[in-house]
Length: 293
Length: 341
Image 1 (spheres, rainbow over the protein chains, first blue to last red):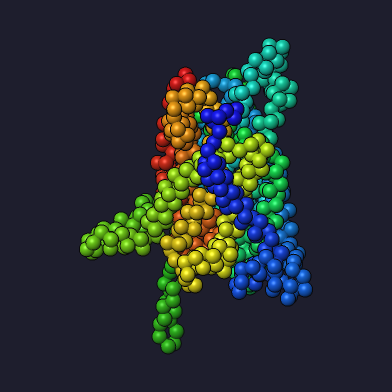
Image 2: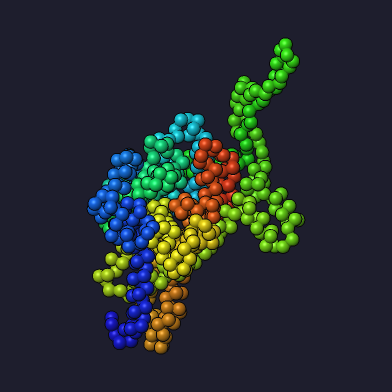
C-alpha cells in the first residue's frame, strides 16, 4: 500500500492531523467540559471571576469543602423528581421501538416482496410524510385529543411517535428486506407455507441485523423528540427532554441552572453508551440509504 | 405477493400513518380555514326604580347551539392566511407604497413575524447545508488516511454531536458560548470587548445558531462520505497518479465526481431537516433574535391561549415550503422507479 508515490508529504500529514484534532476537540470537548462542570457549583460552572475556577472548583471548595459536589444531580433527580421523567422516557422508548418494529417489519416486508404499482406510491407517500416536520401535525392532534380526553397520557404520545416513525422505518426495512434473496421465502412457499409462515419461519431468523439497525434509529427518534412530547404530555408524564426544557423556564430565575446541567449530562450518558456499543450499526444505517441511491 | 396478503401485511403500519399523519394534515388544513366561534353576546336591559342599565352577557345556550351546528367554527377562507401574523399582503402593499428605499421596505418586512421567521429559516437552511457538506467531506478525507486503529476512536467522537438530543446539544453549546461561559469569555478576551454578549446581538446569535447547525449535522455528511470513499475505484485513482495528477487533482477529478450522487443525497436530506430548525432556538434562548417557522408554530400552540388556527395556518405554509424543497427528491425517485420498470 505505502509505495513511494502514495506516501503523503509531511505538510499534508501535519495539516490533516491538526484539522482532525481540531474537529475532535469541537466534537468532544463540549461534552467533557459540561460533564466536568456538572459536579461544580454555578459560580464555577460559569467562570464568572476566572475561567480556571471551572477546572479547580474554587467556589465549590468554599461551599462544600471538596472540589466536587453532587448537588446538581441531587437537586435534579431527587428534589425535582427527574427520575420520574427518566422512567417515562424509558417506557416511551421501549414501547415505541417494539411497536414500530413490529408493524414496520410486516409493512416493509410486504413492500419489498410486492411489485405492484401501488408499492411505489406508498413509498412516495412515506417519503413525503418523512419530510413533514412533526410539529406541523401537532395542531391537528390537539382538538380530538382534548375532546376524547386522550391528551397528556403516555400511550397517546407513544402511538403518535410510532406513527411519525413509520415512514423512516418502512424505507429502511424495505431496502433491507430487498437485500434478502427472494428465493428464500419463495422456496418456503413452494414447500407449502403460507406467506405469513414463510415470513415467520424463514425471514424472521435472518432479519435481525437490519431490524436492530432500524430499531436504533427508532429509539433515537423517540428519545430525542422534543416538539411532540412537549406538546402532548402533561406535567406529570413528561419525558426527559421536555423536563429539561421546563427546568430552564423555572431555574433561570431561581439560579438553579446546575439542575438543568446535571439533567442534561444524565440524558447524554445513555446515548454515549449506545454509540459505544452500536457504532458499527449506526454507521451502516446512516449509509444504507445513501450508498445505494 | 397477492393483493390480499399485501393488504393484511401492510394494514397496521398503513393505518397508523393514515390516522396519525394523513388525517392530521387534513385537520390542519381545515383548521387553517376556520376560526372558532366567538361567544354569542346578548344585551339585556335592567330597568329599576333608578333608571335603566344595559349589561352585556354571554348567551350560553345560543353559543352552545352555534358550536353544535358548526363544529368546525366560522368559515374564514383565506382570512387567517392574509392576516398580519402570516402572509400579510395588505401590510406589504402598504409598506411598499410608504417606504422610499428598498432597505427601508425590507426592514418593514422584518417586523412581520412570518417574514422574520422565514428569513431566518431560509438563511439557516442555505448557509448551514453547504458548509456542513464541506466540513463533512474534509473530515472524511482526513479520517480515511488514518490507520485502522485510530479510525474507530475518531468515528466514535465524531458521531456524538449528531446522536445527542438536539435540545441538550444546543444547551451544552449555549452554556459555553454564553457571555459567562468559557468560550464566551474567550471571545470577549480575543475581541477585547467585555460587553460582547450573545444575548445582546442579533448577528452573533445567528452565527451561533448556524455554528450549532453545522456542528450537529456535519457528522452525518462525514459518515456518508466516508462510506463513499471506500468505494472509490482504485484503478482510476492509480491511472490518474500514473498520468501525474497531484493529490489535489486526484480529489478534484476522481474522488469528487465519484461522490457527487452522495453529495446530492446529503444536500437534499439536510435541506429538509434544516428547514425544520427549532430546538436550538429554544436551547439558545434565542427567540428575541431569531425565530423559525417551527418555533412560531410551537409558540402559538403553547401557553394558556392555544391559538390553533394561527398555528395550523403556519403549519400549512411550512408544509408548502417543505414540499417545494422536496420536489427534486420526488422527481429523482420517480426517475429511479421509471428506470427500474
